[in-house]
Image (cartoon, rainbow, N blue to C red; front, top):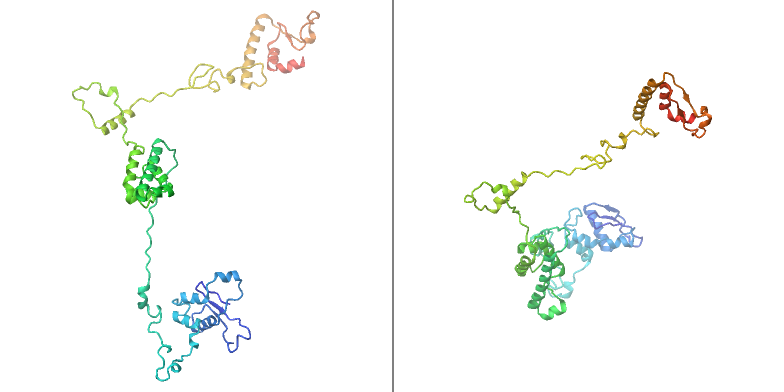
Length: 394
C-alpha cells in the first residue's frame, strides 16, 4: 500500500508469487527517510506498482508516485536528495549497457556518441547556483484600494442630466477613437454601462473630485486618458455641494440703538456665529396643553381622575356598584335629614309596610314601602342602610 502526495509516504509491497522472486525482504516502510525505505520506494516506482486497497476515484485524486518524488526531491523527510535519481530509477537507466566499444572498436575509448557519460551538472539540488538563472520571481500584486460603499438613493434631475451627458460623450468618444463603424456594430465601447452607472452614483454622493478618485471608485482603465473630460461633465451636471455655512438674517432688535455710521458689513462666518448665539437666547414657545371638555380646565382631559366632574367623584346612591365611602356618606346625610324631621314633628314612630295599608290605598304598588310621618330615626337608618333588603322583604 502506498500513500503519497501529502509529504508522508507509506509503502507496502503486496506482490504476487510471480513478481516476488528474489525480493522477499522488502517488508513495509512507513514515513522513514532512511536509505532502505527510500530504496524500496524507488524500486516500487521502477516496477510501476500502483497503490492497492483504494478505490479508483481516490487513486485519480492522488498524484503519481514518480511525479511526487520528483517535485519533493529536495525534501529531507523523503530522503531522495536528487532529482536525477528519480529519472534514473523511473526509466531504469542503470540497466542500460554501453556499446560504444562495439560501435567503434578501432578506438580505445569507443564511440563518443554512444558512450554514456556522467553529466558535469547533476540537478538543482546538488548544483543550485547553475540553475539560479531559471528561477522566476513573481511579484505580489498590490491590493486594490477599496471603493466607497454608497447608500441607496432616489435619482433626481441632476442625476438624469449627468447620465444623459455621459451617454452622449461615450458615443462621441467611441466614434472619434474607434470610428463610426465600431460604434454602429459594438456600441459605446469606451465605457461600460456598469462604469457609467457607478460614476452617476458616486457623483450623487460627491465621491469623485479627481482622476485618482475616478479610478479608485470605478476601476475604469481609461481614467488616466479621459478622466479630465469626465470630471468636467460631473462638475457641470451634478448637484451642487451643500454649503457648510448657513446664513441667517439678523433680528430687528439686534440693530436697534446702533448708529448707522458705526454699522459695517460683517463677514459671512461672523453673521452665522451671531445668528447661532442669538437663536439660543430666543424664548421657547409654550407647549399647548389639553383642555377638559367637562370642567373647562387645562392640564387634563375628561378621562383623567383629577377632573372634578369625573364619574368617580359623583355620588350614585341608587347604584349597587358604588364604593363603600360614597355609600357611607350618603347614609350619614340621609340620617341627619330624617332625624331632624322626626324630632320636630313626633316623639314616636311607626313603620307601615305594604301589608298594613288601608283598604282605600289598594292602588299603591305593593313593592314600594310607605313611610308614615311618625318614623323613628333608628328604623329610618336601618331602611336607608339596607334599602335592597327592606324592599325584598316587603
